[in-house]
Amino acid sequence: MRAHLAGAELSTPTVLVSTIVDQARIFLIYGGVTHFRVGAWRVLGYRMETQYDRPWLATNLAALWSRWAFHFREFLVRVFYYPVFFAWFKRRRTLRIFVATMVATVIGNLIWGHIPPRTILDLRGSTLSAGLSTWPYFLLLGLGISITQVVLLRRPRTRKPWTRDRRIVLDVLCAYLTFQFFALIHVFIRPQEGGSLWAYTRLFLRGFGIHLDG
Image 1 (tube, rainbow, N blue to C red):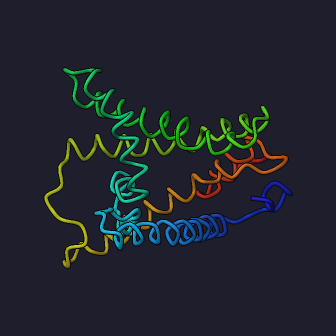
Image 2 (cartoon, rainbow, N blue to C red):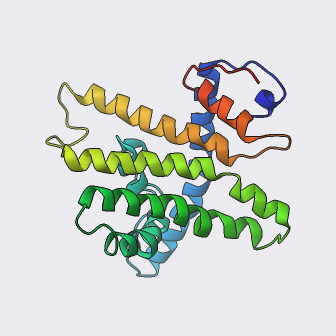
């Protein structure tokens, strides 16, 4: 990100590899902490679900979201998804699922999940503004998950992922593409001094091989 903002011409492989390695780094940091907490609760006799359930096995964004940060996702589903799902568009199931998923992953995820940690210890307007400026990440994540939900609803799976057959190569490819997209959209949630939405967008598109002039 710093090299991009400094004017360096980054190649598409560089963007892809660096984003996925950074996401793996974040997972190892938070995964280690949360798994320790879960283990501590289990030692004390509580039935506590694991926080991360092997997200690298997800072959689509909806599966990734169900495996990623379990307790956080459960809160968003109960507080944001269910109220919308049971109240809006009752006669249009596809639209109801799409809207409820967008509300949970975009509004709930941003307003409840990320804005408070940024501002609770620093009430400056600039901190709040920096948090709100990360909205493209939440929008792209929400769209990806919502569209996946709709596709799976209309085309239910007849095969369990990671079955040892000739299509397992497709599972590997889908798992990579899913995690790569998830890692790539994080360029919008890593604000840097001197950065702008246009600069982050150019870096994001560069991951797809699209090079735009600054």
